[in-house]
Image: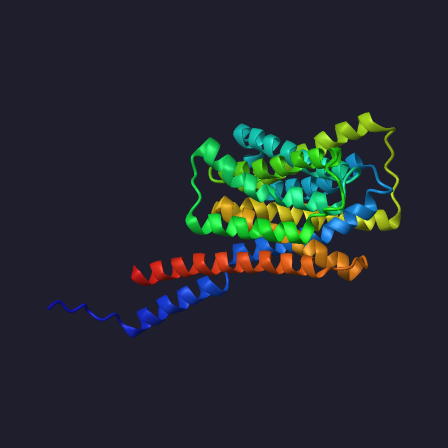
Length: 316
């Protein structure tokens, strides 16, 4: 009979503590959830602001605020990384995808309902694994497949407006879903072999340049803003863009793209909640059920994933 040598108590307790912390709190997961919450809060702000502010100008202002802040940070932290050509080119790709995502969603909202827009945009979570499989041969795990279908059902209940017929706004918003999916995929790949801070800075810079060029071609340039518009755009720039897209790119150094995509389906859940709290919009039972299904699916996914990691840690 073979007896295993017992491990010292302090080593066992250390491993248990490590596993418990893994299950209960992961900084990157927490920040990704916080990002989804913040993006949810921006939906009704954008909807109100775009009534009086040109959509191209809106995207330009929120991205230039983020770009200047990030470029200053990188310049004082490690300015040499700004001269890396590969990072610049990758930032250009991500920046244009970011501009396309913002602009197509904003323009699409002019022609379709908020429900259709939220559903189509969030359904981009399904596009991510399809693109990963077609272009990078990354297969879905069984748990991921189940969670995707659960989340998609929740998204339908939460956001889809069956009273509005399909229209050109829906087709424009499809561009949003695809550009968002590609942004998630490419940022997840680029961040593995690039200077992450410089990459994020160039992303914002090129998004600002693209949107400003389009703004100049759409109407006479005017920089006038009311106090409320300026306040909204500062929030969108510093919190909704700088913080959120920093986290979404930075976190993918260690968090799988599929996990990030699933977490970001929380955005319409919090969008509905903020609209109910601050915009006096009503929440129907179907919408509440949809939100609970999405939340439950994501919690289940994270619990199963972290438990698997914890068990692996104990076995080592």
